Image 1 (cartoon, helix red, strand yellow):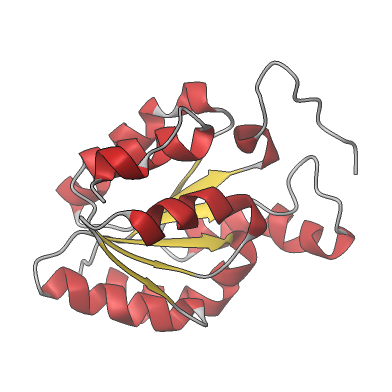
Image 2 (cartoon, helix red, strand yellow; image 1 turned 90 degrees about the horizontal axis):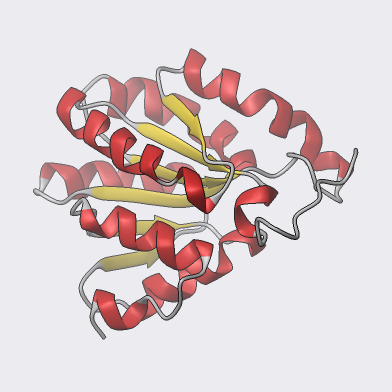
Length: 182
């Protein structure tokens, strides 16, 4: 199935995936997250990309570094709690060797989260990303997807990794979304 066929709808996941693919991102790894389920389903059916599910995020960073060195444009799909697992690999591998990784990250612990244990890392993740040298952009709604285009262009030009955080608001129908208070 081609990329066009893989993007089945104009859903937030479909719109995001189309933007990322339009920038030539063609090698993906993922760690499961319920918010990213549709993105992962698209990856599983798109025959135009290489896609591998991984068991841990740092394993994915190693695979993506190799893919980049082999001429591919890599991305990881994960939830923000997994960022804590990759800080060393990001600092000592991808940052050190100027390997730009696109990170599509569900922002667990953001407004609307129902699992209290997700909140501490949700609150800390942007600061942790920036402290470890990864530019971080929060994409609040599908209407903000131009920031994904700009961010990927920046990452490629500067040979730096970039993380896009997608809070609950991104995945909801923008008109019906009402954030829950924590």
